[in-house]
Image 1 (cartoon, rainbow, N blue to C red):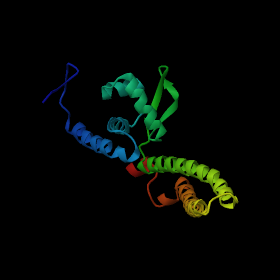
Image 2: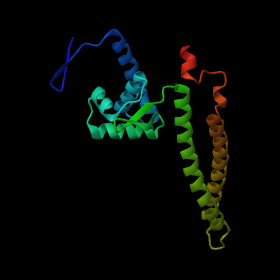
Image 3: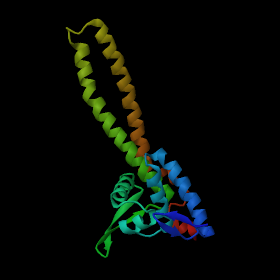
Image 4: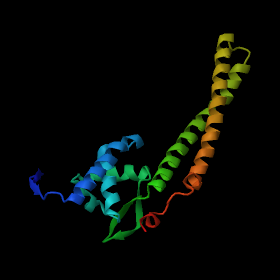
Length: 191
């Protein structure tokens, strides 16, 4: 069965292409867990199966997306550490490559996202805690306000202990400690 797209008839998919399409669809459906929309997930799946660096033009042809949407999708995937821009070029065009090692993709993605959470939250907590302490110690602070500030201060101290633990988790994640005994090298896994 041929499918009409953009006025062009597409050839039917081979069994291998159908199997890939099923997996690509599953990848795209689960990408919302990572803050990536469905279409961007499809692009990652296409790039993963392509298993070679691709130009924006090649991606655009395989996805039938506008150039601006394709650029936005690639930037989002780069920010998520699921795709990287390579130093070398193909005929003066930038090359991009998907991280095909799922252990590595998990490691990069979550370490980056969690580190951002740690940095943002610790920055806010460390800014606010001294101000809360000053308010608590100020003679002109009403007693009810002082009690509420003390409660907030205790919550923030608990938050600091959580973010210290989370930092240790991220450090172990970045070191690869959680992947001991796993095939982190895709080429080894296919041998």
